[in-house]
Structure formats: C-alpha cells, structure tokens
Image 1: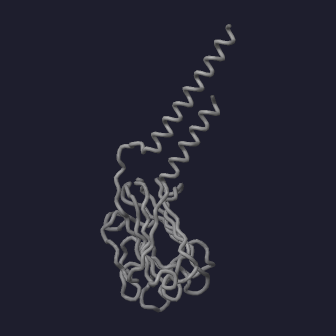
Image 2: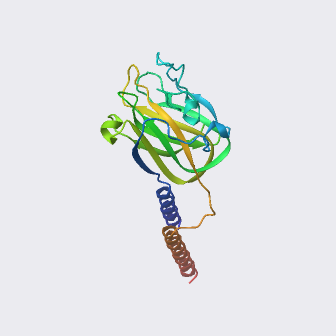
Image 3: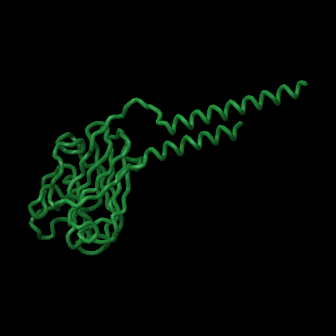
Length: 235
C-alpha cells in the first residue's frame, strides 16, 4: 500500500514539474533600448536594487557608471541608448543583481534585452524569484552560445523572451555568465521587462485528471487487497 501511494506521489510530482517548464525564444532586435519604462519591474513602480556584482565605471566612454538599476528603468545610457547595465571586467564568473518590487507582483514571463558588439556577450542567462531575498526559485535559464550575438543570431542586439506559468514574488535575481573574461568583457544588459500574469483557480489538466484517476484506482485496489487479507486471517 505504501509503495502504491509513493508511486502515485512521484507521478504527480513529475506532472507538476513538467508543467512548470519555461518556453524561451530569442529574436534579433535593434541593439538600442526598446523596452518598457512602466512594467512591473520598473523603478517607476517602486522597484529597487538590493545588491549587485560590480558594474563598469564608464572607462572614458562618457558615462559615469552603468549600474544594475539601469536594467529596471534607470536612465544612464551607452552610446546614447537608454537603459544599459554593463558588468565590470572580471574572471568570467557569474554576474548578477537582486532587486525587489514594491510589493509582490504576478508575472508569466520576462523580456530580456541584450546587446554585444565586439564583446560584452552572455553565454547563459537566468532569472529567479523569491519572497525573502535569500531563497530563490529558478524561473528560467537559457544557453545563448559562446559566440557574439551577431554571429549566432544575426544581430548585435537580441531579445530573450521567456514565458512560464504565472508566479508571484517580490524579490528577483538575474544571473548572467559572460562569454569570456578580461578587459571590457563584462556582460551588457539593456533592459529586463516583466510580462504580467494572473494566477487563476487551479483547474487540473487532462493529464492531471488521468493521474488522479489512476492513483485513486491504485489506492482502491490496495484497500481491497488489504481487506481480503484481513478476512482470510479470520477464516
């Protein structure tokens, strides 16, 4: 009986996990800023940066800093473009920042605008959500390849569009792994926009119904088998 229940629980867990997979598409875009300035992640709606790995200080390009806040609505530019977080030179390790929204927001996806000219590309990007700024759940992760975006996707600018089941969180963490290390090789992120979502009342999908029916049947069979064994003992 315990084995039957454990098997059913495992089947249900697999079904839930499969339903939570994110769908990710990458499309070439103009390298400049084309994002929203009023989405749920934006500073205009009360979002703020909690922490960040080091960002570049301008390097004589004409802008003082490219801080993480630019990815959620800050105004500093890169070559005249709005937005832009440019991470500092480093070892090629994961670059990241954590931000919080004014209150919990429900989203069903994100649009991540990236750009890379002769460097500053990411080979992997990921987003996580949580409610305390410490423990995070992965919302999506995507491998972009090790080359420049222009080589892989036909444009120096790309939009990574991730869509997933609606979730509600107040803390988010972006992780990006740069393609290489060395001077000026920190990844460049133009904007991170939230796609709003709605968490509806749970309605089991056909696959879930099937698993529940099978599970109830297995439990019933187990109970009948146990009852039959009890009767045989008294006979």
